[in-house]
Length: 282
Figure: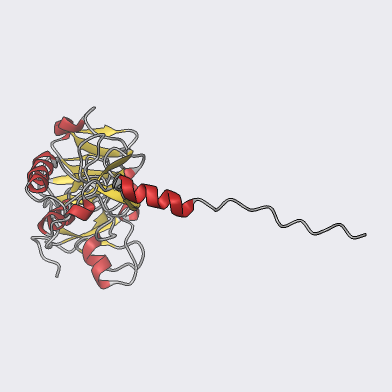
């Protein structure tokens, strides 16, 4: 509902006149929730003052009663709201919550990131233009913060928190570990040391592919996990079946000498006798 206080999304004292349908809504999100189409915020030209109901050109204060529509106003996004240290990022094309000095725009990722990620993140070109791989909703223009994974992919912060609560630790897109797992790998090392495999599986190996370093290697098989010999990660995938070590052949027992002699006699064929000569016919 429209009110001088704004809506659940923004604090403002005006309504936007939707350029698509001409209806009045507090914000584009309220419009999109009620209509079967979306409002283009950049095409908004008119607003209605919530105090005096004057319809007028979009700007920060009412031309009639001079009430301030919002502590912050962007004349590009036509965003009215209370002051949250917002700033408009030209490369992103939208307003973001600041302060501006706490963020920088990564040209390759095409996204504003926290300053502590400058030179300290893996770039993925236009990464925020992809939908969140968990909820499949937009990330770039979402009002929900984004979480940057070590692999460079993005999730909504809320989706990442839900993922952690369910015990998932891999990026849904590339399967890389979603955070530092060294302590967990150390625990698996201890568990494996205390849980030897049955005799028939001892010495068995398996080929694996590491999701963290992409190494291909052959390692000992264990039901609790197969450890990458390259980076030490247990975030691996089995590539093929078990490779069993060949069993060592046991030496044949020597037979007693007497048996050997008897066997030799048995194996010796009798000497062939010359056939009897028949008399030569006359």
